[in-house]
Length: 95
Image (cartoon, rainbow, N blue to C red; front, side):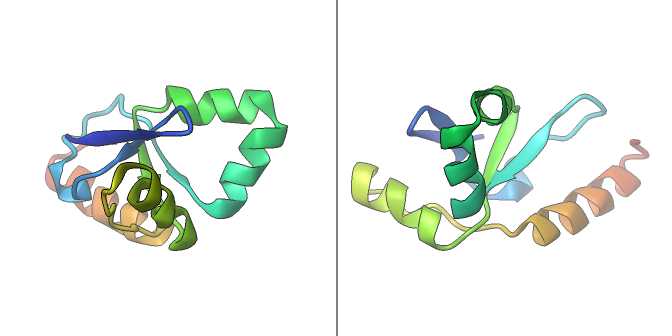
């Protein structure tokens, strides 16, 4: 699973299909709004930093990896992630 670090956040830079799920994985999304909130709320920022997989949810935040690291990172909406992982969990009989 490939990640890219932007502003101390390890963002998923590969497809969500590459994430191996199990019963103990924490997946969060980060959007422009949640990024701004994290700048004001240290506890929330720490929660995002310590998550197992942080997925981009918001087109404008995708420009940060492009401008800062020269890498385009695909946006995955929170809804897309939810359905994808619910299907995977169901296939693998996970909770």
